Length: 243
Picture 1 (tube, rainbow, N blue to C red):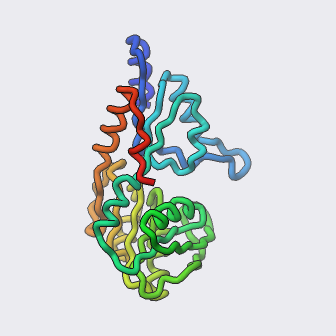
Picture 2: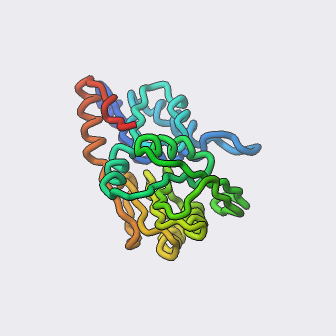
Picture 3: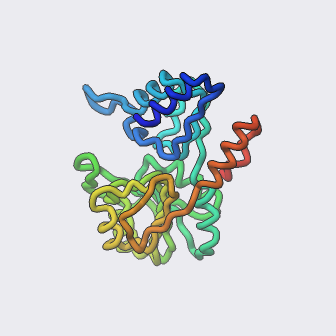
């Protein structure tokens, strides 16, 4: 609401262009009508921003790429891989395996695996209800491997911690996790602390105040600053993408 008011104020002050910079697009998970009589929140927010008067959107790691199509203005969709991949390379892990905590995130995880030149493992999960995992199976080999789980966000950490524990039980040497957005709501910090995850790395797209010794945040400020500079100067942002 504050953002909409700021856009309206700028528009009424005769701003030439209004660019909304939203590192974490909060309604991105509500991107389709998965059951009767529910709203498509991502589309509604896109409409609100457009009607308020934005000319462009800069965001990072949308839950689904097709959300860009909800907007009738240009969308610069940045990827957290620009800061997370260099960090993973700096760890110099031997026998590394990239894993996706669910089938839906396989495309993202496969991109990391190709860039790093290592195998890909998938987890197949079923949910009892929203934010509650009923069962999970591993597709692939993790025995004696250093596993890195890749996801776009961690909310209650139920999926992430369950995947880590199952992989450890399957013989994984170590389990780490990387995710773009640090939602970490409810019991997430306690779950991560008690799980088999050695380290979980996020960007700072969302402030994280509930300290957990296993959580590390990497800044995306420079990436956004450079993108804003290039957009304002009408320069290409293509080489902002590692993959």
